[in-house]
Image (cartoon, rainbow, N blue to C red):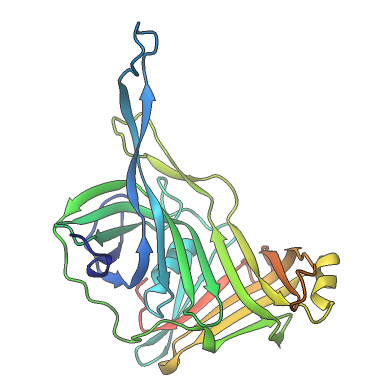
Length: 318
C-alpha cells in the first residue's frame, strides 16, 4: 500500500545534462505527477484482418508538474531553474541575497539543454525511488492569495528514468514554514496598493524535448520553441477607473511583490515593465464588482531583464 504522505522528493543540481546525481536537498511538496510516457508508432495496416496490428514503442518522455509551497530555502532551486542567471552577495552571518533573472542575451547551459538541469528523486512509498534525470523547468508559476501560503507550480521536462534505492530525506529546518499571504505587499508604479486580491506570476520558458537519430529512445536535446514569457493574472477590486484607463492606454507600470518572514527571510519579485493585456469589466450580479485582469512583463532595457527575483535566505549554493 503506497501512501502519499509517506513519500518524499529529493533534488540535486546536475553538472552534465542527464547524468543523474544523488539528492542533496529535499522539497516539502503538495503533489506531483512526474512520469515516464512512451510514444508509439505503427508500421503496418494492410494485413488482411480486422484485428489491430502490433505497433512499436518510440520516444520515451519524462514530464509532469510539481506543486509546492514557497519555502524560503527550497524555492531557490526552482527560481534558478526557471531564470537561468544567479548572482550572490553576503548580507550577514549565514544570510545571502540571491538574485535570479534572465538577461536578453543570456547563453544556454550547454549545447544539449538551455537551462540548469536537475535530478529528482521521488519516493512513492513502494519499495524504490524513481529517479528522473535531465529535468529542466519549462514553466514556474507563483500564486499569492489570502488564507494560503505562497503557492508554486513547476512544469518539468526530463530525460531519463530509473529505479534506485530510496534515500533518507532531511527537510529544511530554518525556516520551518513557507512564505505566507499575511506578509505579502504589492506595489504598482512605485506606490503600495490594496486593490489586488489575488496574483499569479508565470515564467514560461517554452521548452520542447526532441528526439534524434542517436541509437536511443530518450530525448536527445531540449530546445526553446519561443521567447521566455512572463505572464500575470489576478483579481482586482474595481473601485476606481485608474487601472482600467492604464489598460486602455497601454500604460507601462512597474509591479513589485514583496513577501517576508522572521529571521530576515524575504522574496522580492521585480517586474519593471508590465502592461495589462485584459481588463474585463462587468456586473456579475448584485455583489461587488471585481476584475479578472491579465498582463505581461516585457524586457526593460534599464534593468536588463523582464523579471528579477531577489531571495534572502540561508543558502548560497543554488
